[in-house]
Image 1 (tube, helix red, strand yellow):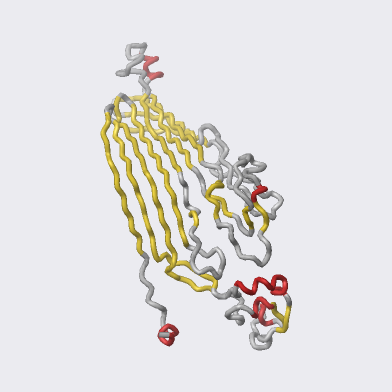
Image 2: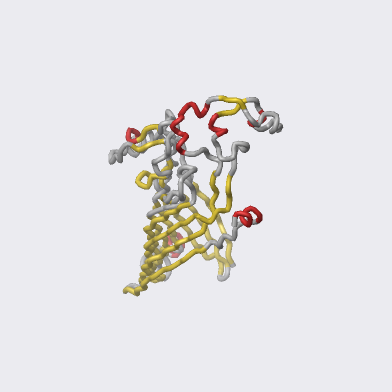
Amino acid sequence: AGAIGRERVPDFLHGMAQQYSMGFQFVLPWQVSVDASYVGNDSQRITITRNVNQSADRFLELKTRLNARVANPFFGVITDTTSALSQPTTTVQQLLRPFPHFTGLTQAVLPFGRSAYHSFQLQVNKRMSQGLYFGLAYTVSKFLEATSYLNPNDARPERVISDSDRPQRFVLHGLYDLPFGPGKRYLSGAHPLLQRLAGGWQVNWVVTYQSMQALPFADAIRLRRSESNPRTVDQWFDISQFAPQEPFTLRVLSSRVADLRAQGIRKWDLTLMKKIQLAERLEMRLLGEFYNAFNTTHFAAPNTTVTSRSFGQITSTFLGPREIQLAMRLQW
């Protein structure tokens, strides 16, 4: 079996995804429909990579002695001047690696990764009637994955909240023809000029609220879980609950902390449109599109490097400020 393994790549099974869902649909008065579903996806044999040239964990007790310079047994054997192993000396840690004649060695396409997504999804829709249409979508979910190793020598990948996890998302969209002008509830019998000014208006909206990703922390330990997180630009979370990880120790804090997240999305996009009938088959449309209409500032993730002077601070934004676009269109 060993000889066969050295001659060819092992026969790994292909990745597999199991998707499942169950839902109920209801029709309510006022032309409203409701769709409630449970949706899940379990993926197995996701290909991942692993560092296979890390010295054994038991050598961590040597601490700073791992960095000591000693005679390099590969000096003169490895002659590539770009390699650190072509020098007269090397470190103790390098010589304690399983393959000391390599500075790095990665095993790829390992089918050991897994992920699991579970969600409740709700949709509410109202058909167009009396000039009004709207739809609502709400999702609450959890996305876990095991696609990397917390420490290089760990027996299995770390099961952690995914970087793509967005536990809550709410979207409200709709359209409303304002009830003014010819054939409408109001001002249908007014002066023709007033009818032309007041009629033909339509408003569209898309409102998005969404939670964001869990925060990653590297080279840190968590002393306690704090409930006193300021949520300000200068200090997004209580920094006293974290401390630097001691050198030459194994990592114990999860690579992402699910209860600490970046600020969510709170975005309103609005469109105002005016229809003007110029002739029997010629219509002009004036549009005003307002993206992030209320100019809400969306802050990026805070600094999560525990040794940084700006640890816990937010120094940038994402999405962008209000954007207005004006357009005119002729339709015939």
